[in-house]
Image (cartoon, rainbow, N blue to C red; front, side):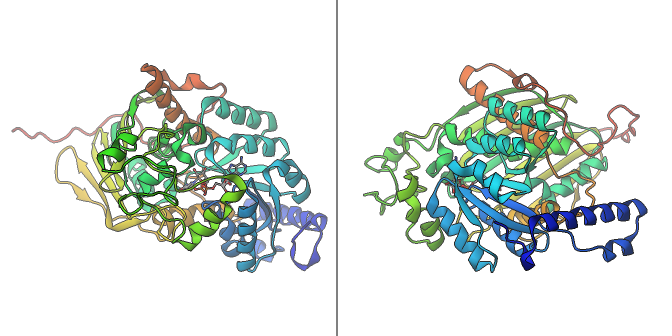
Length: 493
Ligand SMILES: NC(=O)c1ccc[n+]([C@@H]2O[C@H](COP(=O)([O-])OP(=O)(O)OC[C@H]3O[C@@H](n4cnc5c(N)ncnc54)[C@H](O)[C@@H]3O)[C@@H](O)[C@H]2O)c1
């Protein structure tokens, strides 16, 4: 039942933990570095992971490799017994004790028996809420991948569970940690362009990564909430956090233009087919995707199909798809800022352009990403060579090019910084307040949920009316919005 080193029991381990925590607390209060060094090593935090697909692997390896002094993996859970076995082999390869595997139907038993301190949720988006709520009610802390959930009703269940249990859910918004995005936050906080009054933000997905959403479970709203939830939760969260503001109104339109049976015909295919693996038109199709040729995809998905019938290579032109690929959104914020946002999923390049219009000038910022496909060896959210541009343009005078902050690894280095913040027992203080909880998780998905309602009914939506009892997320202080402004120098034309 427990995998503690040296045959320690859970009880001994917890006593050591409490002792260390009180000593560490004293160390902080006294500001005494040497006292910290003299304390016994903190007990390792016990983690369980539910959802053992491609994203889980980063957390799995982090717990068993980079952060093994502070963390241990005590249980693995999934609906697919094949993927549980793949994950157990991963622990073996990491040189770690092999955690017990549980089917999703034994989730509550897993919490009782493995006694995790923290559950990592990396399942299909629409199932997050169920595991979050059950873990909170069982007294287990939760970190969840984005999106926190997929609709207002599920969001309400999570908010109610947090209120009922007095616990918070950590939502893993890795984009906040990508160094050049943190740098934009730093510029905005420093008042480089005064107060922001409006934002123009355009995100492009190419026909590699973008098309891949239409091949997987993401292509159906019942699983992902559509790209307004699944993908844009990152982007809406970035804007909420960059501005330190809360969304109030949403107008939106959305449509599917490209990933349609009609487009398959226009490309000269006879028809859409069920999936690539058995497709008779593999040779002709530029969207053909081979699971068999990639050992990782083969092991994780193709070889596990017999257990759950899930195909990770469904036809991108299939009529089962009900998510949009072309979306335009207008968001009004509580501080008067307006955001114009678009997302397009069949583009020539991947990345984004954003402009913040402020009382003292404008920030223009863009990132071009490398080609990436989930579950392969390509780098998640990797930034292309020279792909970051940030400039500050004052109301008067020349634009200033900003040397970008850099990082390494997934999402431009953001994943590593987020993992430090998550797994280190005493992470460095963060003046940008990048660690997000359920309030930020909700504020971002509710913009997407409101946009989905607009797509259906064509009417603007009041975001805060979608749920009850949602507090304001903790944001770092932003420039004063009411004080005197320096008069720009006279420039007669
Ligand atoms: N932050 C990021 O950059 C990022 C990147 C990729 C994925 N994600 C998120 O991570 C999560 C997982 O995505 P993925 O790409 O690993 O998907 P995936 O399809 O590779 O894996 C999902 C796993 O969940 C399991 N599962 C599905 N329904 C379940 C249920 N009801 N109970 C238990 N297990 C269930 C599946 O069997 C599978 O093993 C998603 O929420 C996604 O949005 C985040």
